[in-house]
Amino acid sequence: MSPGTVANVRRRFSAGGLDAALREKPRPGAKPLLDGKAEAIVIATACSPVPEGRATWTARMLANRLVELQVVEGVSEDTILRVLKKATSSRGGRGRGACPRA
Image (cartoon, rainbow, N blue to C red):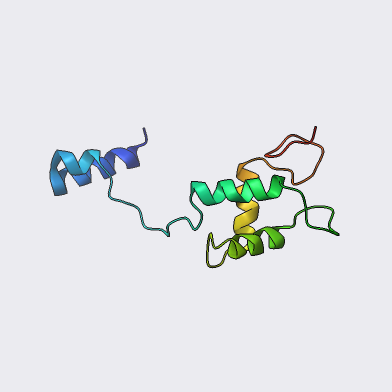
């Protein structure tokens, strides 16, 4: 534990009592755009057969597919890539990922 942490806890205790010292206030930030169900849809779509004339799914294609399925009103390609990275997906590569090839 660092001296700064001790000082912060002591300051919270003196300002609000024991409960304030032991529990932090909620931190600011935006809610995630995709919940667990939406992330599962992204991964399932990435593992599904690719559209005619394509070799692999692209992040843009996956984002557009989520909008078509009315999962979200809009989503960026970066968000899709973050979901796939979190699932360790290789999107068609040879390594193991969210949808490994046999």
